Length: 364
Ligand SMILES: Nc1ncnc2c1ncn2[C@@H]1O[C@H](COP(=O)(O)OP(=O)(O)OP(=O)(O)O)[C@@H](O)[C@H]1O
Image (cartoon, rainbow, N blue to C red; front, side, top):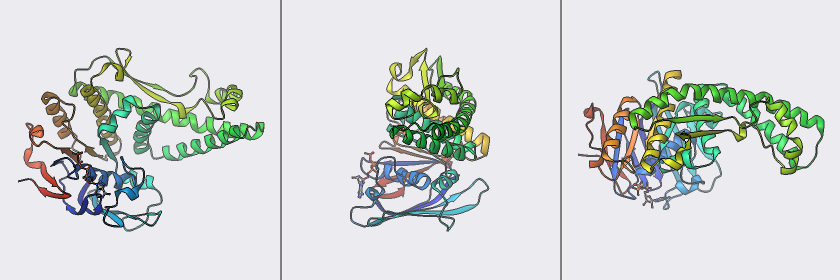
C-alpha cells in the first residue's frame, strides 16, 4: 500500500498542501514547528481516524477555520488507485469518511485497507508503558493477518463487559454469570490462540531485525496470556468469582495479557539505553510490517518521526539501510538533513522535501 497523492486543507498549520510522495522513502526536513509531525498525523488519521497526539479531532482543525479535509489517492496491492477522504467540521460530532466514494462500514475496514506503523517518541511506551500498549501491539498484528480475529475479539469484549457489569451490580445471578463466562472462555481462548500463533511467527523476524540493527544479545519476548496457564479459562473464571465480585471486575483472562521483553532475564526497560530501546521498538514494528507482507502481500506505511533522535551515526546508517530493504512507503522526518545523508543504495528512488511554515516543497 502506498499514498500516491495527499491533499490537506486546514489540517493544523498545513492549510493548503498538495503532496506527491514516492512509494519508497520520503524525507521531510524542516525546522521545529514547521509541520512535519502534522503531515505524519494526517496519514495516520487516514488509517485510524484518530490522532496520535490529540484526543479530539477538532483540535486538528486549523485555528483560523472551522473544518479540515485530508484526502488521499492510495494504491492497493493490485496496483489499483482509490480515493480516501476524512473531513471534520468544528460544529459537528461526526467525522465524514469516504472510501472509494462510499462510507465505510467501520473504521476497521479503513484500517485494513491502509495499515500504518508509527515510530515516534510515544513508541517507547511499548517498553515503558503498561500491558495495554503491548496488547494493542499484538492485536494490531493479528488483526491485519487474521481476518476473523476482529469478530472473535469483539465477541470476547462484549461478554467481558457483560460479566463486569453483573459483578459491579453485585448480583451473582448464577445462570447469567455462567452464560457470559462460557462466552468469555470460548472467545477468550480463541483470542489467545491467535495471539500466541502470531507471536510465534513474529519472534524469528524480530530476532533477525534486531541482530541487524544492534548487538543486543540474549533477549526474549515472552507472552503472558493473562490467567493461570495450568487451568482452562472457564475454570479460572469460576474459581475467581468471589474475588472478582469483591473487586467489581474480571481479574483474569486475555484482557490481562502482556508481552514481556527481557534482556538476559531482566526487563528491557531496566537495562537498555534510550537509543537501544528505540532500536528494539523499531525492530518490533518493522517485524510486524515484514510479517504482514509475508502473510498477506500488503506492505504497511511507516511513519518515522525524528529518525535521528537518540541514535549515533552508525546506528542511523544501519536503521536507514534496514528501512530501504523493507520495500515499503516510508515517511521520515528530521530537523537535520545532514543526519540522514546516508550511503543509500538507490538514492535516485528517494524523495526529499522541505517543510516550512506549513508548505511542502521538493528540496533542491
Ligand atoms: N490546530 C492548529 N492550527 C494551527 N496551527 C497549529 C494547530 N495545531 C498545531 N499548530 C502549529 O502547527 C505547527 C506545526 O507543528 P508540528 O508538530 O507539525 O511541527 P514539527 O515540524 O513536527 O516540529 P518539531 O520538529 O518541533 O517536532 C506548530 O507551530 C504548532 O503550533
